[in-house]
Image (cartoon, rainbow, N blue to C red; front, side, top):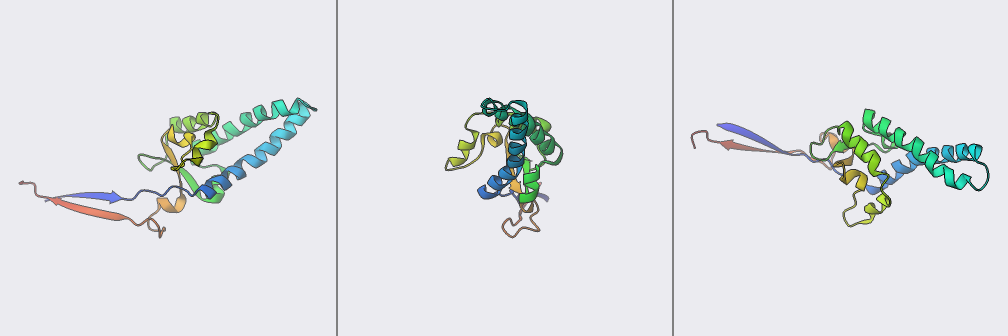
Amino acid sequence: MEEIHLMNNKPLKAEWWRRLFGYVIDTFPILIFSMFIASEISPGESFKDIYPTIFMFIFLPYVLYFEGVFNRTFGKFITETIIIDRRTFKKPSFEQIVGRMLSRLIPFDALSFLSSRPRGRHDSIPNTMVTTTRSLNPYKSKKNKEVILVIKKDQNA
């Protein structure tokens, strides 16, 4: 008899409030720093024109580095969330991380969270998802129980 083990152990998606809180933690300090740099470079009215560019030149490498190395940014560390490959539930490839970073440049990416099945374009395009760290470990999570189905096949059949 050959045994086949099938596991229903899909990590849960992170709640919207965790994602929002992590985003605020990541962006607020960079936004303030970008405004400060813009005001020093270009005081006056042109400040409004330059600070979004400065913000992107700081934010995108920050995201690329932290998500590429740790699968998470500082905000995700605090909210206990992590990025995983949606198909394998493992660490995403560097190409997927770059895809996430570039997808953030799509106008109205944030609006994709307002649908009936909220999932950011920066997750759907590179096929990643954000989950909680507890959801990845079924033995510590009460919500995500591991189910193992054992099917016995008769090799003679």
